[in-house]
Length: 299
Image (cartoon, rainbow, N blue to C red):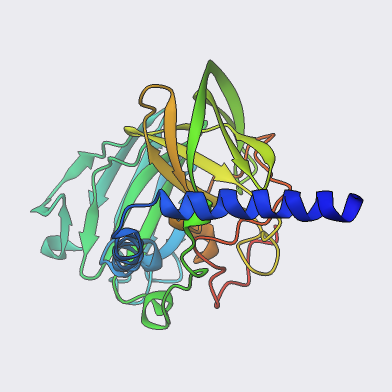
């Protein structure tokens, strides 16, 4: 009797997975392949995460920047020995150009000291010198300088992204449960920020119900999560997933679009980590696999 019952449960669970696959759009596979191609193109872009080449935290007063060894902040060798001075006064950052017309700010030449605009979502003024660029970022109560290099070794050596086989069983028409509140979101740089979370997203897989709590990223729900693949198969620090905002208290939660955080590719990112409760006790065998060249985040 027990054997028959277990077989029946197995058939029902398998039937649920088949139903999930049947509910996927006819061109579902091509949609996911297109998303994967877009993901890799973004990484390979001139301003993508693979070009990240430095991260420096500003100290009050003058901070010299350039490729010369005497600078406070060292830029890649593609930049001049002296590029300029970044001055931090309270929350104000100014830049003084020391490299002449080789330097632009927002693609315009600059001959004097200018104030650099920045905000928490990196909509910042960009200082460019040849293939190297940098801009101010704000993380909690810290101000830093993020450097990108179009000739970065990481970009040149990149062998491409890898993904689990596309599986519609990991595409869930999930329930959204409104529960707005601020939650603590830790990061790899040891900071914790309070972020607005609109509620809980609930889905069922293999007869069990699981919950994740997203935050906002632009006009999307942003999930930072771990699962039982978050060891050798996928990134140990967790993965990320964006979905449209809820409609009629439903969210299309598609783990085939789960992706690695920037910290998987570079030590110069400031990635958030999964908030409390976002570790799933199940294998999510969908989405992006661990980057082959990744050997850092075990922080």
